[in-house]
Image 1 (tube, helix red, strand yellow):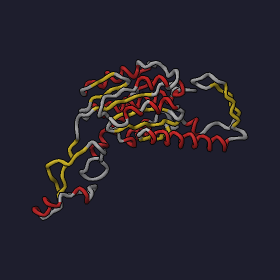
Image 2 (tube, one colour):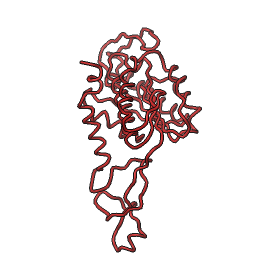
Image 3 (cartoon, one colour):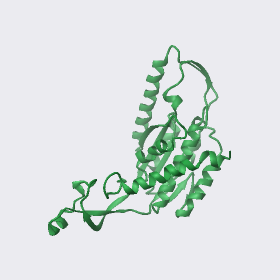
Image 4 (cartoon, helix red, strand yellow):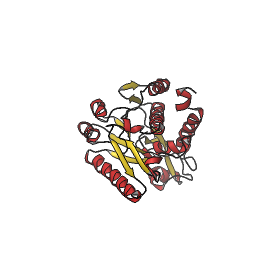
Length: 278
């Protein structure tokens, strides 16, 4: 099996296509699925239908027609989306699930943005046009395995002004990661960061573990036989600490659990839907 077929199998693209169609069609009636910050009210009208909100009614036009009319939504096109991936070693401490999930989510966000007419920057390389998706895919395939620590990330983040910034990381981002946002928080439209939590982090085995820190190499012993409850408390405290650090530098933080089934691409892509970055 090649890396391309393993990282981007046909089932992933089917799930991505289903997501794109769901966003256009919406859940009910003729209304499109809302995408905050990506739609504006157009000038064309249609009769209100199931799935519309009373807030969408054009009351002036409705009074003239003696019927409830809503404005057809129009997609905002263009803009610039910056995607950065924290590629420190803690992304893949035991297996490649988070590494693969991170690259798949980056591709999904880039593809949706390109389809809407935006330009995209991934790890410093800029892509534009609907045909650029294959180039984004190639760049994600060419990424080396996660290594080093998040200080590398802090030296790399330099998005252009007035961009939307989307960053994928893990629960263990340190001070260097969060401080890298400070110079850009005021100049960007929005900065969103998603923490990807692996199933092992959320539900560790009931055992005595001996492991090494993925970034420092330090030997760590964890007694999950007698201190399992303490682990859950400490992990929640870590996530709360990350939330506080993100808020302090103007970053909207989303904590998302990766699906237990690594081939459940629909569940994985729900992370993109929840982020509202595209």
